Image (tube, rainbow, N blue to C red):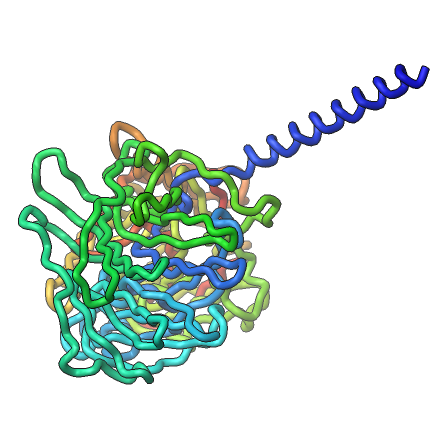
Length: 543
């Protein structure tokens, strides 16, 4: 009898353990990190770990606030926790006056943590004093950040604190300078070329990221080699002394997901001593997306990718059970502060927007008369995400004035937009295709091509409300993304009518915006100031 009871107990325990393991497996499978790690425009990443938290910075150029700081416990669920600066004020260009900073502004920020403080170094991609390097510091990654110093321009640079507290900046194609201990400026006479590029490396060699591991110095960079059988790749230079001599190794040369070869990013360790690479990939209209991969130390080199040196489709989660977060979010505008998931196109006019004048609504007010969307202040943006996503707003347009324009855009240098126009007492809704021309030097708007593909007259009385929606599709097809948007409107938020160009192409143009497509909520005046619109909510879905 005891044997029977013991057998029954063992079988019950075994079944329970198998069920637990099955549940764990299901949870693990559900929580796998799918590549791209973030299927959104998050280029030039730098990533560090402080305690159990990973922090990442990225390039957002002409969007404000700038220098977004994102945080994660598991390298899967990321959220924006702060910005390095609210505005840049070196030039009226940042205010959309006397030119623009489209595709310029903040680039390739370097993030470090040293002796209890966070440091960020960035150099705007500009000529003259506008391009001077900023160094910021903060007690917490969330901020507030304060300016430590300004100094000469360093392209795609990496800040580096050595074990002896000496501080360096490594930049360009293998150039180094030492900084003063207080970071106030460079130490003159310390400039050095620490390596020379190879004969066949005639393309880009940039994106410096420096770490120290087991007493050795590692400099990671992107490399383009225009030679048969070679592609965009990530390379590593290694030395026993920061001044060299350096030896070189290709650590990643892999395409992924039917798109191009990957490069530019960094490596980071976990509390358990594992290492990961975070490297971005160009993905067309959605922008440049970061991917996650193993980093294995082989013969003292940080080799990236799986056992075949390829970017994997999925990665195991570092920590299970973390709450799901994202860098793109819905918003009901019930807070008195604007959410960190939003960025303005260029510096905002603070007096021309409010979350408190009509609680529960975002109010956008006209503050100057402009000719087109690309010069309009206070266009509010969020990233689009793959594989597919949808964003919609509810607009109260009852206080628009003659000549005013309001709406929702798939915002980029080529833009598809739902535009509500007030002409006299008449309101119309148009689906417009816009394309901006910019001067090379000052990024002045020299022209905007505009094509209205469909127009409908609106009769919104008595509610004066309309719902606008854009669906975007970035799923891979034939070696590139589908990169298409479709546009809809509704009078009740339930029955939607498609309008304008079907499958409007979402383009990535490095010569103008150099940025992935964004949802853009806009309002501006073309004749006289004084009107406003209220946005009830932004609803977002991603699949």
